[in-house]
Length: 177
Image (cartoon, rainbow, N blue to C red; front, side):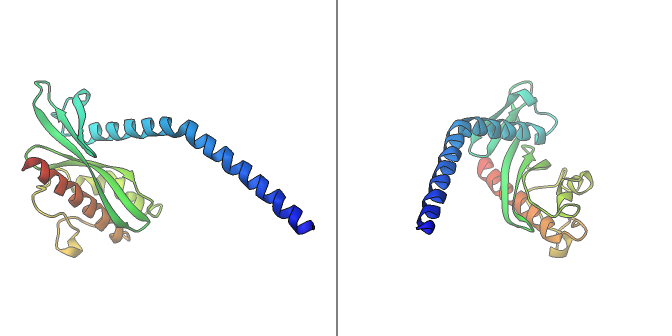
């Protein structure tokens, strides 16, 4: 009989906790979506080439943003690129491109890499290697025949960054066709 009471008590407590969590999810869902949307738009503006007027960045498709210069002409693109094979899981980057298919820079949106090693994917020294790179060719680390120096002790992360940039590049190719 004690077991039945215990099971009923735990079931009631679990149901109450589940209800509270569901209620919190309903209340905060919209706010979280708005914050993520603003963070994505801010990241898109941040990676655009310097000719872009940051106030003239708009989403033109899912994960694809266009930025215009002061005259209203498209002066850059920002595209979300992903690679599932980071050391800590998926890496998602916002990658900036000029209309002549050169990489301006990128910003990490999602990455769970090893602190002190893989997290260096956002270091200015590593990121600088991509600036101005011709995106019409595949991007890869030197170990794979490319031009990118991998982050020390974080080759998997470096490859995933290249993969995410290549994913964004494929989407960019679709825009330019």
